[in-house]
Image (cartoon, rainbow, N blue to C red; front, side, top):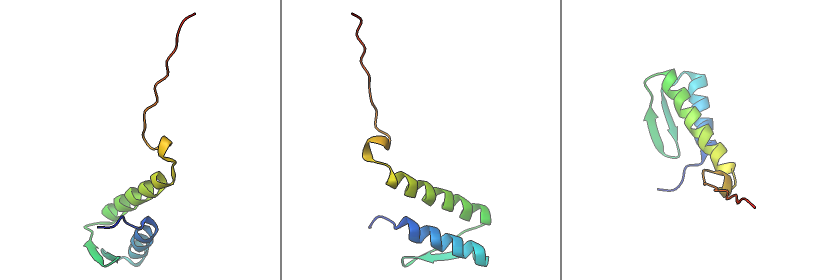
Length: 71
């Protein structure tokens, strides 16, 4: 399964929410949400994934250790 196109997912969710539709189709897949709260949660998820994808790899959750020595 290819990685999702976050912009496409976000646009489909926003269009569905604006039209009052609970069933949203994007990239050939159809999802029926139970409530506007569920659609908002999905929007938050995809927006966060899109933001994370924009971060350089070194900033996306890696660990950096600092070492200090006394003279």
